[in-house]
Image (cartoon, rainbow over all chains, first blue to last red; front, side):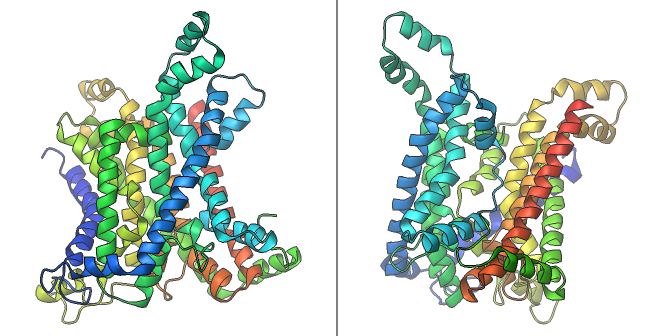
Length: 263
Length: 246
């Protein structure tokens, strides 16, 4: 190695990022009933327990519902906004751009508190609707950025050509623009669904008795009991995330998805 | 409006804010939040920049794999990522056991619910963000400039300090801002790894809003958090602008 310091720092960095995840998986397969290391033996009992634990299953379904609906809403609003920002010449364009493309630094816990106070207590909205409002707002920038990144690569001349050849604006949009945008929309959707599903800070204060999200339910469980069931549940979430990540890598490419956010 | 609960007078929130800014316990929480966030920011930049530089410049085909490994955790649940530290740092955890087995200590030390635990947890959480921001900055710098500097007799370290780092400064500032703001507002990590002995603003906020249902104080805490985040992002865009004009 020509750069010993760089190499050492890189090793430390990767250890901190990855080793805890390995430990989660390793403890999930223990046959003992405490979070000890090395594990007592090999068994799948905690996977059985996690999959049979109603609060986790119910919360997983709730989280999935919320993620799908919030993502759909965010795309429904976000894609037209992206088109308007990139193609249109609307006044106040830079303001819209600034609003959606400013760095994603939002104290989500604070937004959650505000939503709780204003919508749930103030307007008496139920907690699913309030969560939906919050998650949709949080996902909007993802939708605008990631679809915007793929739109920026597309040639506006293609649309003009379609129009010149006699296609109506609507037809030009559905036959030319939308197919160009499809990978962008796909990756924006994937990313925002994963982000919504995993969200804690925004959702934390918006939990209800009938509608609870999975990450918050898991947090509560960890606080009450110190057994490996959460490790098993975490491993299942990890496995699902790996599958999604592979799909993302194969279809659009990681770097593109996340590159869209950080440019 | 954002900070005004429907049935709490605005005056009351500012009264609580005043109390918090003079109360030693609350000041300690604010100080701890800022201090830990600063520490995590420095660590993430110090670890993240070299990794990003290596990933961007290495001709090896493995660098693509390592980039993916660095980005992947961003898609993974924070609860899952943080939970791993409980297994490592817990009372029967791997690190404590290891230290005992190696004979370094007699009894496994308290590792969980310490500042160290929070720093490790937050570094794990935000290092990928730092790597990505630095990576896109390094990737935009023409590698020819490195070679030119070397060719003109600049050593490896001098090239780094006088060529690469100044050119990638905007990316480094963005990385630092994202990590600092993220650390100030993170909830899962201080909740699981800090517990009640290492309270940060976020865990306090949750406590006021949910456990003690003291909305005026919750709003005051939210106000402090928001001001901190906006202060830092304002400062960073100021630095960014100055860098762009000079």
